[in-house]
Image 1: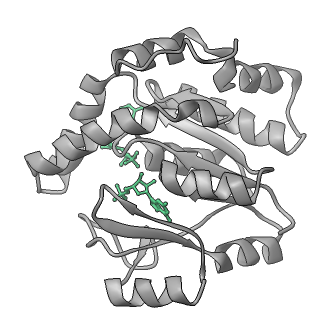
Image 2 (image 1 turned 120 degrees about the vertical axis):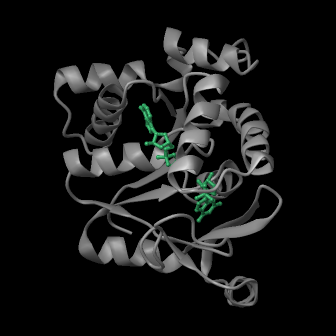
Length: 228
Ligand code: ADP
Ligand code: 5GP
């Protein structure tokens, strides 16, 4: 593939989809890989837009035919996967590709494509994450306590793998997080101004910014094993 590959992971409800749409508005040539999933569409989601919604049988046939770059069972329940064709397609268009995938899938892609630029998005605290999950559920007209609880617990597990990601962004103020992500993309493209370069460097996970430390400690995850 000719373009750059960006891996974005975040606990569900952190605001990753919101942030990614904002960044795609700010930066051109960023293609979004539409994943395959066996979960049911949520709210206003449409087949082929947020996801390709497919049956478990079809997903298993795609695994057997080696059609996925990576795939994982998320929340111990539904399957999610990135088709290899997403890479080919972006490469043909000369676009960079953005993968929104969970930590299990991200680790598989990092292994296969070490040049990929990895970004982890964190919510400022578990309280804010819970609020965002509840607000989104309410807007979609379904609030399942069990689903919210599962996602909050999963967030702690995912955050404990953050040191594997090159960059870490705290999505507290949307505009700020979006300009940080923009500066990371421009830096990876070698198109960053000096200011953008500094901004991207301040988001490196190993820089251990005060915002990052504060978010992690609110989830009970320590920064002590990070090289600073
Ligand atoms: P994800 O894709 O990480 O699961 P979403 O993008 O669906 O999360 O966002 C979850 C909820 O949080 C949505 O209701 C969204 O509008 C809201 N949200 C996202 N980013 C912010 C932010 N920076 N400040 C306040 N609310 C936000
Ligand atoms: P949601 O059901 O909230 O849309 O997504 C749940 C989780 O699945 C999120 O962490 C999201 O990043 C992850 N996910 C979405 N698509 C893929 C994919 O193709 N592969 C993997 N491994 N995870 C995915």
